Length: 346
Ligand code: 13P
Ligand code: SF4
Image 1 (cartoon, rainbow, N blue to C red):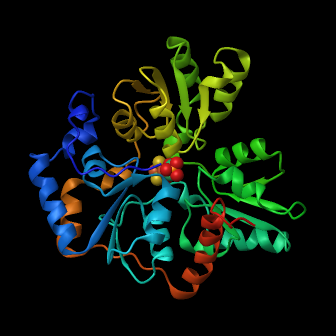
Image 2 (cartoon, rainbow, N blue to C red):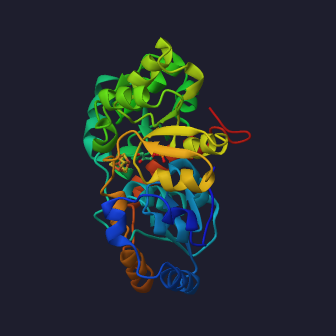
């Protein structure tokens, strides 16, 4: 599900990289990485990196993974400090699960356009209209929103989490409309779905997807459920333009797993382009191509090599969550973590 890697990936040199990546390339990866590792040891820090991070950050991290894998790692590790190479809600989630440890985010501006579409007040308002209702919060939300919710989910367990809820009460799924529609389709449950979206995934259009599939009729299709083109992908897979067995609607780590099983095949990838680095490392024999090469999350790219050094040198920026909010938000995250664990689920 996730992989640790501290060596320089030679494979990466042969791949085309984006302008952001090129601009941030350290002058010497080996020297930069050795300094990062030295500082991390000094601070007793574990480096967790999301699959969308810049390639250099992925390669220097102790673990690279999706939101669920990184939450689980934060919950069970014992390093004094967690350096979260990702975005703010991920660092907050780590702090909820590891309240006694220091959690650092290298750039506090690393937010999330999707998380910003819903506030705690919005959830409270829904609850007054649905007093017995249940709220499922995608992990891409602030701790304040999680605190108002019953259970969290990520893209890799949204279907399982919705399935675990009792039949009967109204259910609000927030904030991602495409993931909510996917969970409703897969479970057959009626959900109230918040109309939020991620600017990166929503912009991957059905037209772009159709064109890429037409140009590459033999390719597999890996689609993140936050994508605006998810419905189109399912439609294509039902029309014979794309045989059903070739379409995978999965989290970023689900994509890495699918990549390992691809042999020397070809896959079209609909998500943020940072994932291509993990996919190519997971299977250097296969060809991976972005459905939309413009799908870059500027927040994820704020963890630059220089900012990671500054973070480790100066112990910045510490992420804290207010006590009562933390207590209630932790409950929602822990319920999610329990689902799928032995003896877990509700
Ligand atoms: P994953 O949980 O699939 O890694 O997705 C997180 C995210 O932010 C998607 O944009
Ligand atoms: Fe948020 Fe979208 Fe960036 Fe993921 S890709 S962190 S959902 S803005």
